[in-house]
Image (tube, rainbow, N blue to C red; front, top):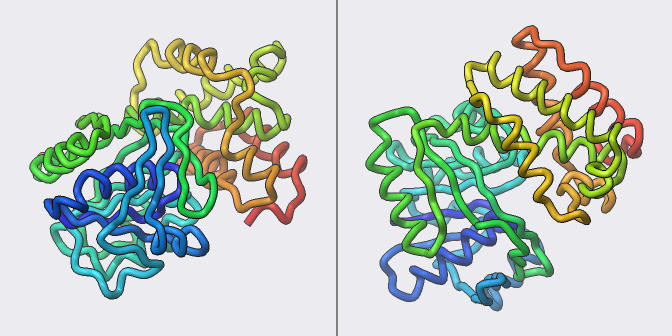
Length: 313
């Protein structure tokens, strides 16, 4: 297979390094990286290094560039850029997307598949999510700090099953845990059920997860946010099951006390951030469906008030 990993930050760097390390030397599959800036320059010069509790690897892809124009048509494109770059990146990969190319977006948040399908005239778009804590440490170096590194993906379309199974085998062959499911929307919403409240409250208060857990008022607000996400999922046609809230609470209780969301990290560093991609899109969906989300709206507005307007793009 010819595989393009578009965006080699935390998620893409984890996946790309493992794929290129497993397959590039054997030539059984070709792995390409879409990257930019000093990170790309370092990868071209020295390869991509992944530091993990399981060990350190340095991978050399078949190709690395900030544009796809000179590459062949891909069999698989894994979209790992941040949500705010998704549409632009999807447009940028069009030259290597054919009718039978499987495109797999793994961004945090909801509505990824629909966004990609709006842009691409060709290709078969699946959906998925990723469970890993990883980030760029320095140009050419990605650090995996925790999480299983598991991909959960799929599609309700039976005709995509052979391609999805081939993708699962590709990932597993690179020692990447991969779960294939026909209920991928449930998996995505269950992750969002944890992600949106934790990202929202850590960003609103400039607090760690432990500080949110220890403050009864903040914790009660987190529970209200979770209830609204469950309601929004149900209105969208996705039932998360009777245990979803309890499972989400247990996950938040298991997080490290000093953990922060990537949204808070980006706000503190003055970087472009995913507030509108995460909470803003949820509010937009609620308006479209006629669902009132007062607590999500309160947190969204509070974040924009707390941090300088120039941080939001």
